[in-house]
Length: 176
Image (cartoon, rainbow, N blue to C red):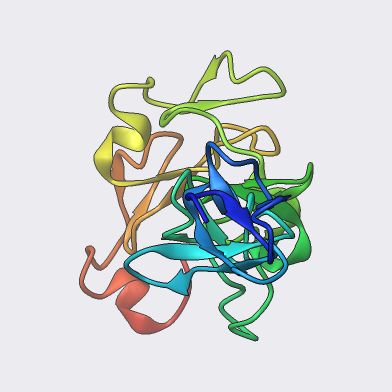
């Protein structure tokens, strides 16, 4: 039979069509025209009657891009909380992380140095130098822009040095 046809009289067109048997992602069975899809790292991981879809956990036009798996179970694609395309997860609302493994407030982010529902408020000390570089801003859509100062520092932009200094604040007998 010519390429793309099968059967005793070559009258059966292969799945995917004679011009593109098995969508060029598998091998056409010479007897019945069914497809055996490629399933390897070189040719791709395909499935479906005409080998037109990627096997779960694989993505991209050649089905060779692995989708991120839940780091806890190592099995769930995008932690079952998103969809995978081109090797990356698009997470459902309320989830984030490479494999959509994180939930809640940690997912509500703003550009560095900003906070608020619309990320329009600058952190204490300004967006370019939040907390004077001496602490971290409580940023994001759930943040309030205040500073969590490094050990031994205080003040609205961490400008104050606590009694006892940064190495031994309050001489080790209290909190600053």
